[in-house]
Amino acid sequence: MHSALHHMYIQQLPAHTHTTHTSLTHKPDAHLWHARLGHIAKTTLQHMCTHNSVTGLPAFDDLSPAYSTVCEHCLAGRQTQSSHPEQEQKTTQPCELLYADTMGPFKTAYNGCKFAVNVVDDYTGYGMCVPVKSKDQVHTVLASCIDHFRMHHPVLELRTDKGTEYDNQYVIKLCGDRNIKLTHSTPYIHQQVGVVERFNRSLQESARSLLSHSGRHYTLWPEG
Ligand SMILES: [Zn+2]
Image (cartoon, rainbow, N blue to C red; front, side):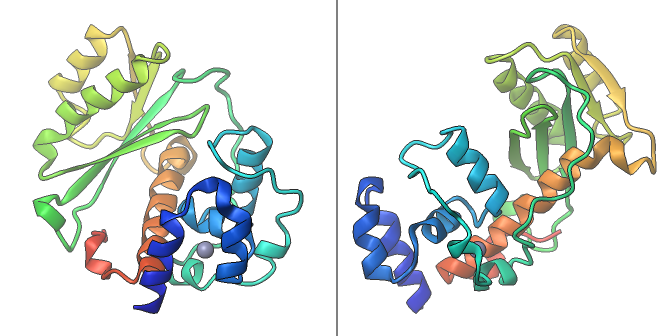
């Protein structure tokens, strides 16, 4: 309960008061931002600082002190505090290649959703996660996600596994209508879907860490 109150308190503070709540919480600012951003890895936070990609994120000189001790909530979420192994990237622009994958069925069907559709851009790592009640809804959600990406850049290729929710007339048509090349990853060639699998794993770990930090019950996040 104590950790839940603590978390709610720091969330209510505006970003520009970070020097004040350092003294109130006895934690360095970088650790606060590590938690706010889903208990992210040091390298990811450093990347966000370098590229000024988060509004209000302070420009930290040195993140090492904040990451010198083990974060109990990362441990609870089984996060490693290091980035997942990078693979050779062949894409050269956003939306050149999107991956789609389905998580589930979940043991705990929160709000009746037993699956989640993840769509991830290979170049940027930007991804979307949308819960669905059944695999029948996957192609509809997939179309919405792809159209979200297309608002920013043309989508050239969609790669999925050969699951029945992707290998069907609906997905073929939605790609055809949008002039998107549809490809399927080769079974058991792990590297071809590594990007979306890392996204799935990061999402699960981040959610567990946030629940640990907030003191909320684990059943609020469905587990596969
Ligand atoms: Zn953490």
